[in-house]
Image 1 (cartoon, rainbow, N blue to C red):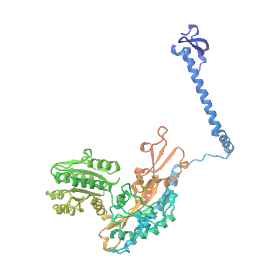
Image 2: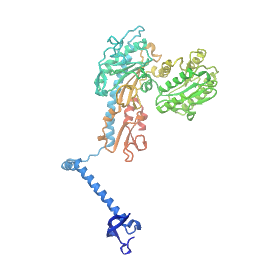
Image 3: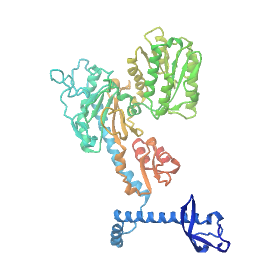
Image 4: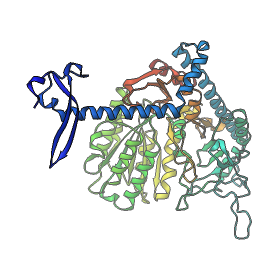
Length: 591
């Protein structure tokens, strides 16, 4: 307890010792309270005790000493004094220049536009070359032709001879392609395991597409920033430049199919609203249900960010596989597609199939979305997967789809039975769709892909060479077996059509050409030192590449503000670029 006489004084240092289990004060130095660096006159009594004040000043002393030592070390080893001196020496010649942010963004926009324009021109040359080559090629069912098969190149048999379609193919590491072993003189051809490499349609397509080789090389020489260029054929083969050795997975299978890739689907078709109806009645048990599930999953794999989807299962009743999505369509993004796949895998067959109610529900949803201006606002289709349809479903089509037939109906008959084939075919043919029968799991891929050709026909007949830019993605499939760091990229792609007069009215899609554009190439045109430390340019936001770019102001509490659009300032950078290429003026207005 402080002496009352010393009530206006406080101890500033205390010497104490620990004797017989208690602290004993040996000497106390006092100072007037008003001279302390804080107001001690109104402190609680316990805070004016000698021991408390002793530790207060001791900790402060430690902090001051530690801070001084750190400052000395940093000053000594960082060269800050030398840097200050150098700035002092040139200070008279330095000046602060105000930067116009809008002009800076416009400059970046012009440079990026020039770079992306070169990519588009490269793709346009490939489209022109492919269509001309097809126009001058006559299909030959007995054609014999050797080509560089990406799986077989440099492979030898037991006699040390090169295998068929596997001739010597020189591969060298190339820094521009992440030090992968490539051949910048020739392209190679890749085919999925389920596509026969000497099928006449494949051989004719590969032979015709040989005309792309000199265009690949010329494009790369004109624009060294180009990366992968390719042609994905509607028959299933994939011509890739520069040439590489393609490796199968651990099971010896090549599952990569260019027709399932986002760039192919977006270029080959327009946005679409899809409702998949699957029969889960008792007759679908066993292999039939397995094939039906695989068919649904394959259809889901053909959908992208611009599409909308839902899945309805039916037996005695109508079941939404995801009850939360009842009566609506949801965007077919990766998360929703994967969620649907998990739910489809849990389906079980039982009961009696009644397709009318499922068709009725599907037509209602599509009509509501169409009238409300929601969904893809382009193609609408119903995918009916069943082992037979026996009801009187004509009344449903008369009421909801005829005579305009705004909704196409595609029918997939599961199993080897042909009893109900006529019914399934009638449904498809009377609703501008396509009928196919799937008997085995191996048949699924090719049969599902047919619907894409049907949906692309109006675009093909009109020869609408729309340029598409995909959303940014990590390409994990193309070189899954190669030692390569994955890159965030976008793809520019265009469809290739048959220009032959005899087939023009049929709307034949030959395939899609494309070229990858790593986003790091865009970022090189807007270095951070030009954008200033207070701004972080993200070029095109990955999920909104076709809409706008974002300039993110640094948030001191959260250095990574991706996704927090409330802190983002929308610019017209990518809007100007991609609206310029696609003619989408709405993008500019939104930016």
